[in-house]
Amino acid sequence: MASRTFQQYINGAFEDAAETFDSINPATGQVWASMPAASASDVDRAVVAAHEALVDSAWTSMNAGARAKLMMRLADLLVENNDLLAEIETADTGKIRRETRSQVLYIAEYYRYFAGLADKLVGHHMPIDKPDMEAYTLREPIGVVAAIVPWNSQMFLTAVKLAPALAAGCTVVIKASEDGPAPLLEFARLVHEAGFPSGVVNVITGFGDTAGKALTTHPLVSRIAFTGGPGTARHIVRNAAENLAVTSLELGGKSPVVVFEDADIDSAANAIVSGIFAATGQSCVAGSRLIVHESVHDALVTRLVAKAQAIVIGDPQLLETEMGPLATGRQLAAIQELVARSVEQGATVLTGGKQPDNHAGFYFEPTVLDCVSPDTACVQEELFGPVLSVLTFTSEAEAVALANDTKYGLASGVFTRDLGRAHRMVRKIRAGIVWVNTYRVISPMMPFGGYGMSGYGREGGAESILDYTRTKSVWINTSEAPIGDPFIMR
Ligand code: NAD
Image (cartoon, rainbow, N blue to C red; front, side):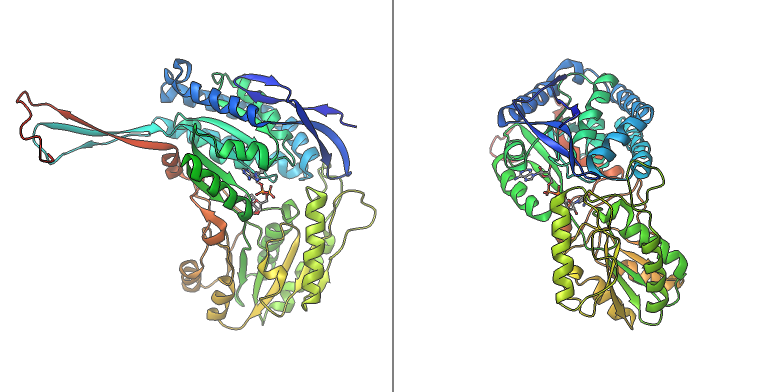
């Protein structure tokens, strides 16, 4: 029985949808809230509202500084409401309260960072090579943005899209995932309170093949910013063939963590734990492939197994809990299947590999699998769970080959005290992020995105605001002389 009901936010108003669906608390496996399921006509109203807001004076009369003030206000509201948002996100997704709390606080920094960029978006005056011409460029908002996010870290993955979009003067329709949408629907209340004009930000939720499809094919959408899986990304790209929206794709990963024989093993072990067991492994940058030099394999793996077994599994709302459940029963079943398949292929379970006793929800133990072959399913396929696959190497060249033996290329880690080797690895690893002697660090100042099946486009970093703009070229003839020969290009 749902104890909470959430509403969608369209054109500045909170409203029920004709259809709803139940949201399950992953820690209990029980229904805890009712969510609106946006229909195609709800999506259409949200996009039309965003399109009208784009040219409405309530938004266009705000200069960049005024937009930035609204974003700063939104950031303050995130901090003020941090506890409530964290509680809701934890209830809806099972992500531990410890992390949802710190993440909501840090998300505020994304709105502040991009607010600071709003009035630094400039065109250029050109020293043009034509007589009697003034020529300059303008940076204009690209238009209506469709921001589509998956169930993990919805608040964060929205911030990296919404903050640059608003700073650039765009309007946005956010489609929350059908799994765990509550924090974004609650976030809409803060958008409202911050005072954004109606239609500038709309938040809907619902299913991919209805709401998602209606949004990504909508003729008034100019920009699609998508985070999710590669399979869905293919649908999105096909959909964008309809409206020719500029599209960015932030997809999954199978990120390698390479540990050399000269690394600080204790420090590496802690970083590896944070890379694979934090957020119950449901992180696109999860460091799920450990590639360790054979001489330190036993020392490192012994530490990892001990650390995995000491992780406090429990109610994600309790601050002492270190690992909560997976977000959905579907996710749990997929991980169980992939672990079983990997074991059939020769992987050895060093710890975990099953559901813990005494937990009713979608829990899975922190798991370490020793793998002989890089072709093992758990080495090649993204699990999106707390499962670490271990491979060994003997030479730097072999480490590079193993690290790059993936269709993905989102993140990577390298642990070594050898500076030259660190730089060589940075150049050779095919991934959008390389962390050296650390893992899972983010900042609004740093671009985030992948190679290969991890998608294209970058989120975060000052340049990402440009992806929410178009350049307009302006030519002004200053001559009073009549225009001459019409049959030549000037
Ligand atoms: P998903 O691809 O199933 O869903 C993502 C979103 O797309 C959801 O909102 C869904 O409703 C929507 N969607 C589904 N079908 C659609 C369609 N036909 N048209 C339009 N929208 C549609 O992803 P998921 O299972 O929710 O999330 C897990 C995936 O996300 C993993 O692969 C993970 O690695 C990836 N991820 C990537 C990053 C990153 O930044 N690179 C971050 C987090 C998660």
